[in-house]
Amino acid sequence: MSNTHFGYETVDEKDKARRVRGVFDSVASKYDVMNDLMSGGLHRLWKRYTVMVANVKPGMRVLDIAGGTGDLALAFAKQAGPTGQVVHTDINQAMLTTGRDRLLDAGVVLPTVVCDAEKLPFPDEHFDVVTVAFGLRNMTHKDEALREMNRVLKPRGKLLVLEFSRVARPLEKTYDWYSFKILPWLGQKVAGDAESYRYLAESIRMHPGQKELKSLMQGCGFGHVDFHNMTAGVVALHVGIKC
Image (cartoon, rainbow, N blue to C red; front, side, top):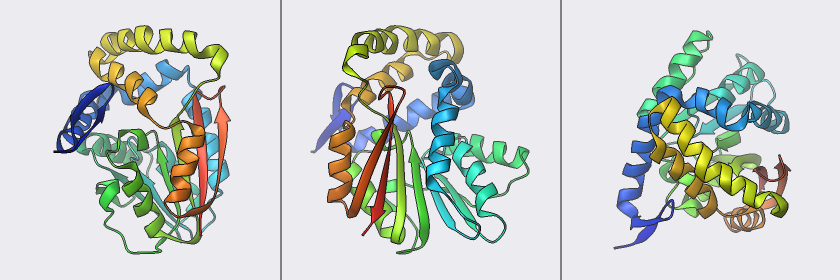
């Protein structure tokens, strides 16, 4: 039996995906509201910056992994235009359904696929850009997922990983207090689920920091990797170019 982390808890690898799915099943309907409350609306700026760096052009193919409620997919669809293609995916059916409905409400119809990032159902060298926003830390085998993202990218294609990271040292104590006291309280008040947001705080601490994730991406086939800290390192955008 192989073990992995579910927040601070050690669990069987086979059990992690089920438990992560349970977290997002629980919070799907309140996901966008909670994102606004937790970040003070900053998540919209983080995603806007990600879209700018992605620099999607008309006709490009884009894969949005762990696409959730569809923020990035919607923005990319506008950029790729009718000659391009944006594929919206998530491992969680509840999140994907919420996102699909939101996209339809905006008048946008995209291919929507339930899939595991560690086993992507797409051909080699198919996409110009792959993105994953706030999803990598929930994956059991991050290296396998990153290799799959590399596989489906065209040569010189771009991977963008937007994820919570290591906050600047002077802010650590305040950030810990906010993460472990305020987030679960907000989760209980708004989504009726404190435990899922306690897991969120723990999963951030177990995720590789900026330099560690850069090294991991390089080891998974990305020849050039940069990261951009935002909000004092609360989040970082890692950008990798396929060799």
